[in-house]
Image 1 (cartoon, protein in one colour):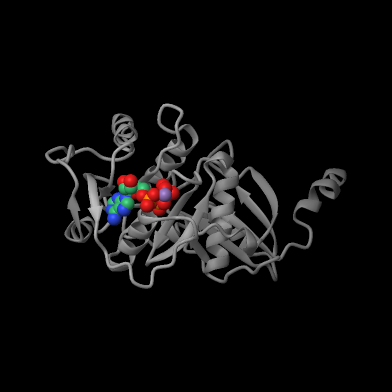
Image 2 (cartoon, helix red, strand yellow):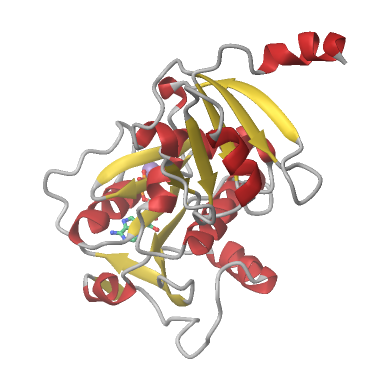
Length: 270
Ligand SMILES: Nc1ncnc2c1ncn2[C@@H]1O[C@H](COP(=O)(O)OP(=O)(O)OP(=O)(O)O)[C@@H](O)[C@H]1O
Ligand SMILES: [Mn+2]
């Protein structure tokens, strides 16, 4: 098989590190036995007790997302560097690792996605569901027309204290959660209406039609955007919530945390 090693070997020749996605213990040990090799383990938990570990809040189904997200986290934690050549090994079909992909770490492609998932108070599944919903709304609009929407996720008690109702709250006595298909239909329907959705750390829809009243002092938002983005950004400085905002005017989905814009994605690119 020397011939195949020559060809496939290019994938891992002279890499700076090997990144193992959720390896088994014995698989990890085999890499640790290789001299002078930097090994980074990425996964939802550090099941192998790896020295260098990057936590993924979710086991991403999409392989390129899984790798992109893992590398962004690894860059953030300083365990790899911009420009590093990496052999990323993950499972695509089975339980074990079956695929190697050579990827160059690129700090420029930083999306901020790691920050909103890994460092938020809210459950990562909830953040993901709301982000997906905003992206879907951005792609489809409401009956073909562009819509805007504002979702405030996490730290709901404090957010409620810094806001007031614009109208009766249709979620008042309900116990519904983001991610349920029926709830997503409701949220899309209500997105035509004014104000913000307030969502708890665990994903419960606490309220719709909420008018946010944070102090907006010193919050910077991109030029051309108005009150929705200002209110969304500012509430994340006053509380530990994150804001996910779909702009009706430019169609982009943005996320704010700690008063800062940390993620900007074009729904059409998904
Ligand atoms: N303080 C607030 N709290 C909750 N919702 C708000 C607040 N201010 C504005 N909105 C909502 O945002 C909508 C759009 O407002 P505006 O055009 O000023 O925002 P924007 O940042 O330019 O967003 P877009 O890009 O979607 O137009 C309003 O109709 C209202 O529903
Ligand atoms: Mn506007």
